[in-house]
Image 1 (cartoon, rainbow, N blue to C red):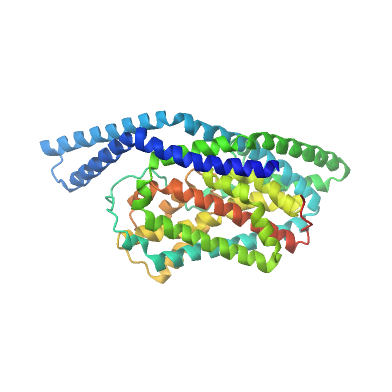
Image 2: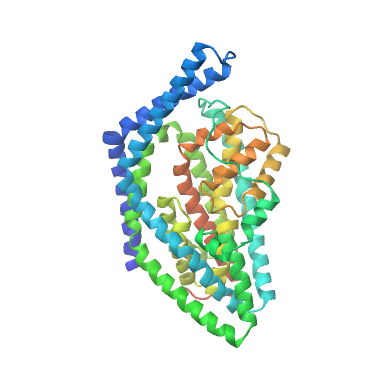
Amino acid sequence: MQKNKLTLFIFIALVVGIVAGYLLNVNWIGQYNDQIAKADKQATNLEVQLAKTTDTTSVAYLAMKTDRKEQLSIRKKNETIRDKKLEPFTLLSDIFLRLIKMIVAPLVFTTLVVGVAKVGDINAVGRIGGKTMLWFLSATLLSLTLGMILVNVFRPGETMNLPLPDASIDTGIQKAALSLKDFIAHVFPKSFAEAMANNEILQIVVFSLFFGVATAAIGEKGAIVIKAMDAFAHVILKVTGYVMNFAPFAVFGAMTAIIAKQGLGILSTYAIFIGEFYSGLLILWLLLIFIGFLILKKRIFRLVSGLKEPVLLAFSTASSEAAYPKTMLQLERFGCKDKIVSFVLPLGYSFNLDGSMMYMTFASLFIAQAYGIHLGFEQQLSMLLILMLTSKGIAGVPRASLVVIAGTIATFNIPEAGLALLIGIDPLLDMGRSATNVVGNSVATAVISKWEGELGEPQD
């Protein structure tokens, strides 16, 4: 009953947030948005003119340079005023997300150590790990391929006829490094305390695997550690219950701020892209549920039904991390053993972000289409494989999907400035991606539990 109440409150907060955001946008924030858009357009036009001017010492060049600087200053000033006015709303979601981040790292560590220790020997850990990674790689390939197929069918970059940003414009998004050294450094922790402090889930997982296997290996003495960790995990889950009561306020704040900033006008401008992308996510959901049905039979529908709350939470806060504790609880209620949940789910948050994967090929090829750059099947396949490698383990990076896309499109000589076409609507798209990530990881955990013969009866 309490769970249903919280889901209802989150949904109400979502609707009220959209209405409040729209009213704020029309009556209060719209004027600043207009000023920002106007200054941004003038600054972009001036940047194009400056790039065409050959004589950099002329009076006209210097005047344009000064004017551009002034326009950027106007944009910055209005953005600051707008953000200040929306601060009370963004603070609500910030507090909630910070509290969730406070919980996630110790929850992953304690539950994973207990889970691995319960699994027992290193061979069993390796077997479950192998099955998990096989599912993750298959799901990643499915998501990336679906994004590639849909963007070639819909061709939104050609049909939308958007005004293109100049190729020299700086989007402010750092490219993801493609080096093996950086990837290895991101996976293996040099300090467990640093990994915990920075919420580096993948590094915490690596340390927890070592710690759990070692704990199981020392026998009787290890049993004391496991008991203590189990108790600690239950304390963290109790804290999660307290934090989750704040979720409706966070959802209201997040939705109000995003709609007040973006307005509903951006929906009409990008309606084709947003509609096609969300159609793609729906197809991905249906595929994941169908594959889950082949393995779990009718129980897959019970799983999806139980995920309403974490999915709604991930969607409205645009953070799959925010839904982690609730997803974990729902999977255990579904009948997945805690040792499987605590092993598969944290790995999924680094290696199995299905919604984000689909977006990467969809967005990358959309930018290429917008600039009229034709990529053959072989080039698109190369892009897909590069995205498959570069996207692993960067879940903790802010705007992770855009960071990976920036690095990938540069490899194919697609202007990085094309990301400016997506930055404005990225928060709206991130909501769908986050919800899909939760579904993908939940189906993965349930399937691995079934394969391991560890799927019990559902709990009320």
